[in-house]
Length: 440
Ligand SMILES: Cc1cc2nc3c(=O)[nH]c(=O)nc-3n(C[C@H](O)[C@H](O)[C@H](O)COP(=O)(O)OP(=O)(O)OC[C@H]3O[C@@H](n4cnc5c(N)ncnc54)[C@H](O)[C@@H]3O)c2cc1C
Image (cartoon, rainbow, N blue to C red; front, side, top):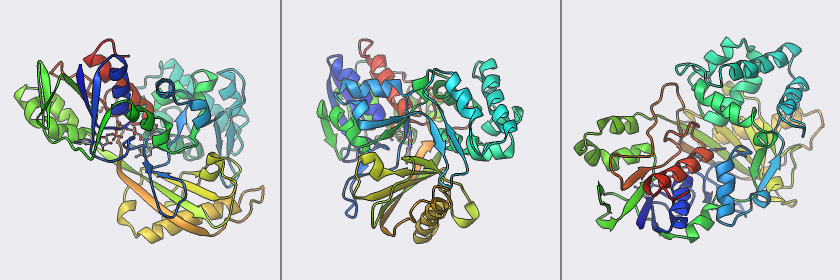
């Protein structure tokens, strides 16, 4: 089979691996120049090692992603730092850490021993998890996360301290508008799964080097090659006027809608076209800073306290030098999810406020951390369309299309997950199966 994949994000590359393994000759069209899509390496003159277009975090429940890394010869144990779930605020006021004992005891103990929560809040957290289990982890489709939290009587402190940052990290959507179904799914697969599922997996290398580079080496890559024409039919598909037996379209839904507008209308599949057009998107900002001298955080990933009025918009800070095993440098990445409006503000002021947020909260840590050294370089990435808004009732297309020669892939397809890496990988594998049932 002569197969094409359009889009070299994690979804498209997952599809290319599965199709190649099933015997197809695969060509990947990618508009950009680096494999990885929204999770890719970028270079910057003032930083010695490559950066990412946005700091990413994986977890132990990302089973298909971890298996795929192995399939292309990459070792997740060496490339990802695996740590039991630990949420610790940089100012030292909050700490929740899962012991290495079997689930579900590990989570129960983590919650009961949490620092910075009242006993009432600790029991409320456990009640919510038990309540979700009783609902078979399926709250009503039209509920928001806030609705779910209020239904289970979670206090404002608990919401602000635990649920809001978790929801933003997993769904990139504020609790007032985020889908309770998708949030429950994430909690089920991570916190309520086997002990290892809740582990945090922190990349120790750039995102393209994790596995997209290796996957890209196995197929014919056409970088800088934007697909502008797509004509699927029952026995083949024309892409930019070149004939293929089959293709996976693994681009964001807005682009898929543009490419398929004519063909879907002709096929009378306007329902699918409407679904592709119905997605809204939310931004994520990542500030990378290089410090004038080495500086270690107590944990490689720590929570930040938000204070919107002061521009303290970050929720997490990652110690990139610690993750890379570099003892001679100080390098941090600060993440602000659902950073709506940040792109329109004064860039220098945004950067200064975020740096101030880290310095101030580190200074409050009871371990008396060294004061944060001066910042020697800063680069702010704002991905305007980082993920789709994971709102209740969203209709997400399946991988199949009206044509047997074309399948869809992307974190936005009906994966059951919000817009995350594991969803992208699963969708790519599923799209390959749609075209060739032997592709797995
Ligand atoms: C800043 C940021 C932080 C994130 N943090 C996390 C996290 O911590 N954990 C997590 O699990 N997920 C996270 N995500 C989400 C995760 O990155 C995505 O779910 C995943 O990368 C989506 O992969 P994809 O293949 O579906 O889409 P994409 O990565 O968008 O891939 C689509 C590809 O298609 C290409 N393309 C588009 N149109 C065309 C065309 N016409 N012709 C050819 N090529 C085309 C694009 O260039 C792109 O490479 C984050 C996302 C961002 C942006």
